[in-house]
Length: 147
Image (cartoon, rainbow, N blue to C red):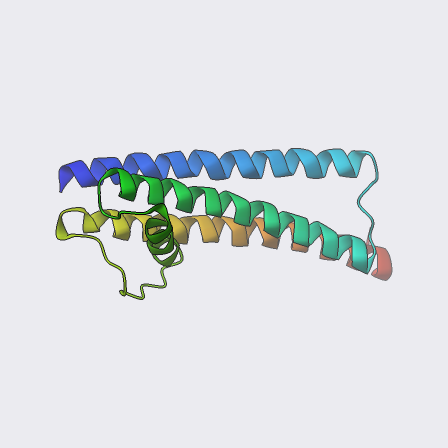
């Protein structure tokens, strides 16, 4: 159990680094676009901003799921990456179908991946909330005149 806990925690840290890089790059891009005044305060512009943000964050999640899947294949829990990736997506999203399971020796890793996924989806939710909140404040201040 200690070995699985250590491996799982190390993988979670690697996933945190991945997510931090994706968020950091996204913030840098958004700041650059804002500085160049490329971010349009129109329905289409704001929709594009949110879509770009969600796609970028989801790409980070997919990379993390792939990392977990590769770990499962490396430990011999699955014969193919496809099966491991499917299992990883189910774990990461905390869906928990139970149709594909790992052996008893490594099942703690699945639970740790689920905890990892909850943290990452929480981070994404907070990030999207921060963006939407700032945009709404700006729109309300402009329209109501509380600038």
